[in-house]
Length: 354
Image (cartoon, rainbow, N blue to C red; front, top):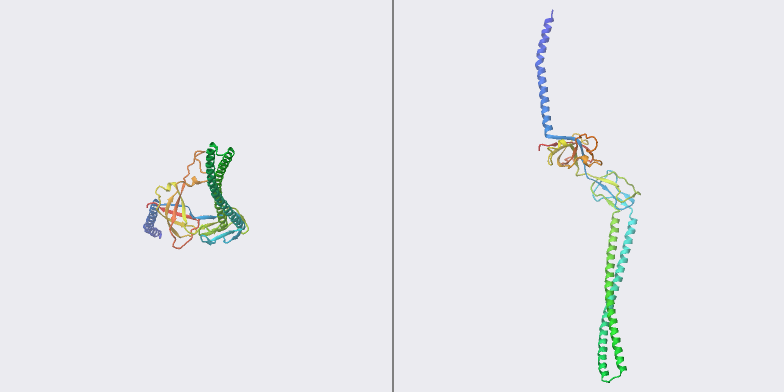
């Protein structure tokens, strides 16, 4: 019978396979150890999160004046340059306000010219009044001298009492005329003060009307709405003929440059993280493409602190929840010019041994 021979062959085959199996097992263990140690070293030197997204500057376009939309010159997702005209509001009402302000300024200038003419008349009147005072003083002095002379003559019986009375009356009249001339001079001086105040007031009115005109022209310039930054038009919400209010968001412009990453790391992952460390970024938009960046700053508080209703651990039953802290990562300039759109999800790995 051949049974012993078959058993012997099987034993020999089994003994031959044993070293191969052991070798395979050793190789598998070695490969597993290699990758395990490599993963351990990687995890020890890096912090990773998939709770990250692209952020960028998004500027809202708001009207500064109310009115009906006359023209909309852009479409959604259209690229625009800074200062490019986007929307035109019907300016007819604003033009009327400019015309009204111009008329008010001309009226104020005319009032100023009238006030200046009145001041000039007051100055001339004061000169006449001063001359009248001088004339009245001369007349009063002569009348006083005549009175003194006639009084001596009357004592010596050289003139009659009637002549002395006439001289006294002339002196009294001269004194009264002098007092009246002086009051007229004072009134003329007061008119000059009043005239100068009117001129100052008229010039202040001119300044006010000029300011009103400048404001009206400024409001008119707001009828043309331009792009505050360069980028892509997004979320356009207006059409020609629509009435818009001051401060209403008409559309937004997403800047096509200067994007950054906000990665929300767990609080337990921040012990060795600091600004300046390098980061590797992968975006869901571009599978297989690696972007490089650098930690720029770490938020001063957790994201929960900025929520509409921050958690209050002092109320109810307390359950400890690991918090996340936003970390801002600056992205290096991409060589291939791929766009980084705000809101896109990202995976971020930060090297924390640097």
